[in-house]
Length: 57
Image: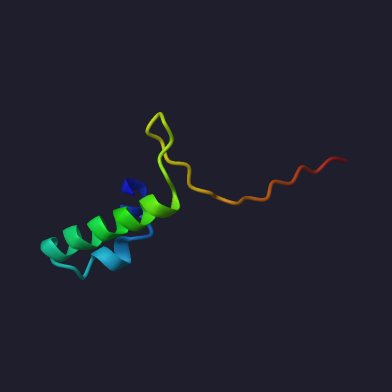
């Protein structure tokens, strides 16, 4: 969530008061935890689909 706070969530967090921001982030954390469960080692893997191409001559 820390990574998203500095990027994708910025437009949503900017207009909120500190209390509203805290409530929003708590709700967001709960929702993301349901979709992306934590592994045994404490890490969370978020899918980032990418297409890699290798060009050869």
